[in-house]
Image (cartoon, rainbow, N blue to C red; front, side, top):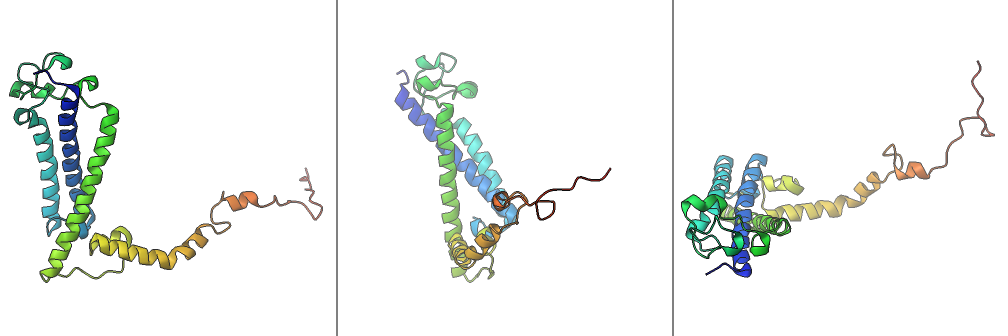
Length: 218
């Protein structure tokens, strides 16, 4: 049967969303291993976590482009080279993989706007999975008698030795303690050369009490 818009868009957008999740999840694991953020690791060591992230990225890319062979969509064998509006529903052949996703957005393909929506959504889902997984595995390590190093750092630095809830708790405590002093220091008059406070100050006369300036003698 010919591919219709709704069915084609549902299949392509679903695969793209899963692609965004897998690539983002792998990238987050690599970044967490490089930054030493143990609270986000899926594996106990930095090297293993980095390898896991690289493998996740590679596997996601391969599976995404091989999906038309195993999943039915608007890329049936023998119809990929045709116009996207006349494609048949089915599985693609190995020879047609390169053009399987080349479906016009008016025929169910993904427009640039749709990609700009689905990829950040996939990253957000991957971030949630990273935070949840790192937290659960961090708790499991504590239950197994492997306590994490006590640290007083807040913000991202807190993830070097604690889980995401630990980082949120420490950061909130630090914010409540220091926010008044930090705001006062940030808006202190004269802190910046071109601050708004300097602009609001009246211009100072460079001359005597009368405000006139004596011209330089020749």
